[in-house]
Image (tube, rainbow, N blue to C red; front, side, top):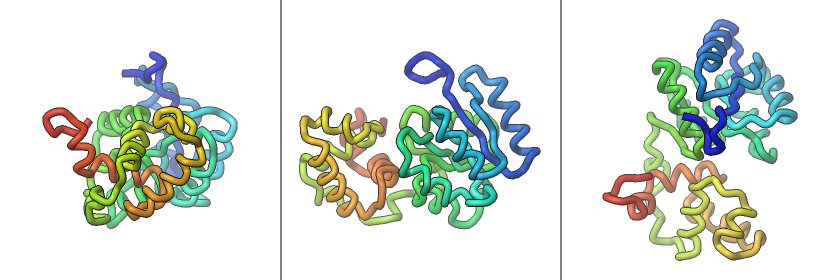
Length: 217
């Protein structure tokens, strides 16, 4: 499995544990579905690389020195063409929820097998959100009925990973109108960013309504 262009998925790894980083690097190197762009032992090293080199998916530890995973994801949210982030960490406490709230695209527990992590990276590269230990519907009551037809269309288009410019073209509206609808959409869904809105979409009945046989796409 490769990306839509037919080439391997560009991926970067960041982990403060040299043994984990070495093991992950070897796994990625051996898998033809991926192209390992770089590795880093710190959040700052990861950030410095992805600001210069395009990367589709980043796999990071939540406790990366020195910034930490949450701060790193926060910084990346404001960067154009930032990689989609998979948090690869111990499944302890509320970590999957914290990762999603920060803006990560997925959470993969270290206790899972290697193929689970690989499949998670493939799903994330395809624009999906993967949080197997988190029922996102618990974050808020279902406010789908509050959305206008335009906002529903916006949410569905957003779930495809479209940029603001692409949303404007898809919905035949201006970029300023896109920003206006997104602001209203986030408020109605009680979310803070695109990642959380997309996660809500895939956990909601709206996704079920759009899918054949009631199975989310």
